[in-house]
Image 1 (spheres, helix red, strand yellow):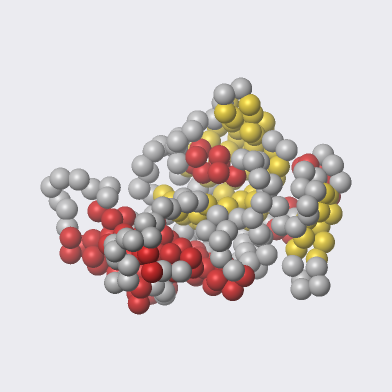
Image 2 (cartoon, one colour):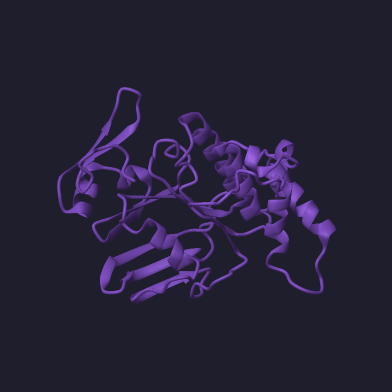
Length: 276
């Protein structure tokens, strides 16, 4: 899968941050979501964005995509203020609507990712088909190209959506809960696909997740959002009892279950488990 992309590999520490947030405050109407968020993401990092429901994980993507603006503070993406329709960013939203009777083939949807941003003179169906084929190959979905979307499983659809986001050869991927409806096996398979793309292309990738466990071995960084605050750093530094207790302002325990999975208990998440 790595041959399709000739880009440099790995985290690039010699370049300016791909994302830089400095004391960002953001909210809806008069209700704050973040009160003081400072963090950065380097080019080529694979980052999980986690935290309890309603903490502001999707808000982060809205900010990065230029859909929402901070109340105050500074936010930069590739050194500039975020803007809508940035071709350097590929985005997979949390929800896609697929008609159960749809006969649209997977390849056609991916091809739209190549042609959808171009209008008028200069459209190239042959180039779009070639780009779609490369993207499908990169996510291991070439055999799915001719199949109707309505016949695909949840894991197969996520690969197609990922290919659609990749087809424009972006420098950053924003993936909003792509694992949420997948079983453990399919979730781990999709994480492996994403991780290989991160390594092959050096593409900066942020993935919102409920469950950190399928991701933990692949991550460069965790951005944990809770209680209106943001903590970021390597998983070994952020996913600790002292760090999360400080973030929540309440006792939090980070435990491991009998299968070796990380379990976070306390704070604003009384049910325990891997905060959503």
